[in-house]
Length: 66
Ligand SMILES: [Zn+2]
Image (cartoon, rainbow, N blue to C red; front, side, top):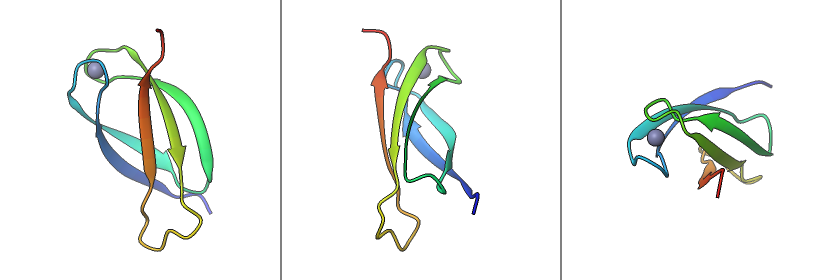
């Protein structure tokens, strides 16, 4: 099942709210995507809890170039 959900979070660089699409069919994924506002690379660490019943997802963001 390939299901994309929108997730809102704050950019670790500029603090702006951005909307990202998360593929919830993948249990654990890490990737880099540029911020839509400041264009700096944000590292995403996404995990979908196995017992998630209400579409709850955990998203951690980090500075990619430290
Ligand atoms: Zn930003």
